[in-house]
Figure 1 (cartoon, rainbow, N blue to C red):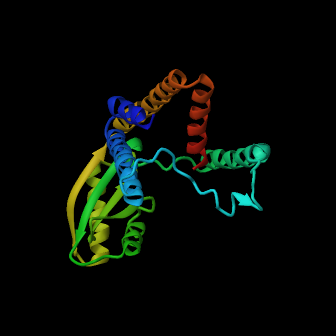
Figure 2 (figure 1 turned 30 degrees about the vertical axis):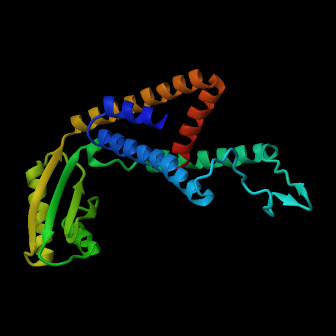
Length: 239
């Protein structure tokens, strides 16, 4: 099902959505390779290449047996408690999203990306302070490669061009660093491109969920399909 989601995301999505799909597919293929070949190699190493028809998960484990009798865990008996706790956390998560909103990158919202390089290692807090003094309190600052390279993301501003914003950022940084700053690159993502990327990403997610629903329903039962999709939505909201 994860590979199905990756294929759908790559087919319908664009930009970073496709990049995520490729990374997801590589991770799943690597996990399958490790689980099949790696586990088989470990079993052969332990049993010396002998044919094994059944594997014991440990009948003598203390938590599984007590006094010669198996211990039964009544997991489903606690389902209402688990549902209540999960529902409470989900309500808190939904309320937090409603109050604070989603922290989307400039790929989705549009904006300006500026990469600068320093002559020596720089502390990010100093860069943030310089940008704040220059009037860019909302700027997102992170390292990009070496400790001397910094990536700055700026939200779009009405009435100001991308080149003008980059010049203001560079001037603010040069003032704080005594001119030891070099402009490496500048990229601008328009709001229309961000809206298209958001729509494509949302459509890809919906199609992927439908594909998973159909596959699980055909392969197993429709109840499992509905449960798996609900679990996916639950996990996304939960995290």
